[in-house]
Length: 155
Image 1 (cartoon, rainbow, N blue to C red):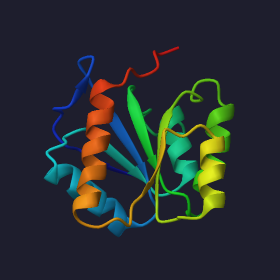
Image 2: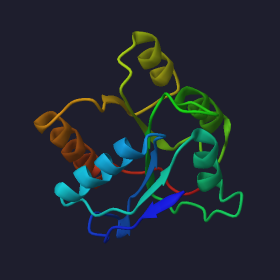
Image 3: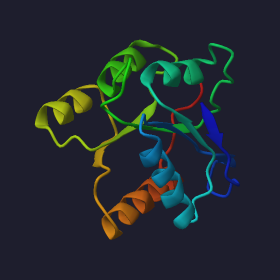
Image 4: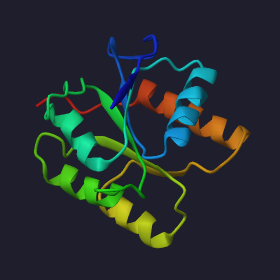
């Protein structure tokens, strides 16, 4: 796990919204971080490369520090060990994590993947292979989302 620490400027109720980026491709992960920086989004980002590690971060297991709330998960589908759909199925069965806000951020444009993801109550399905201005719009939309949305209260 790498913690890509950015200064905290975007706040939700005086708390920064932490981003959990679950992405097995390091090049894609770094491109995401650069895109956030370019948009001057300074939220803390934690990057893990599969669903098992993501669950460990969310639960504070395996010697990992638990991800502080509020948080938003950006999730890829095609990953080793535990793919994005499997991760969502486990997440939604965990009483402490079931209300987590998750956006799929993937290259998969398959209808089956979209349906499976929405069946697990994702907030949105975003294609990361959109280049240039469209990708910048996607990042800007995420920034606007967490500035106006009310996150679930801590249980």
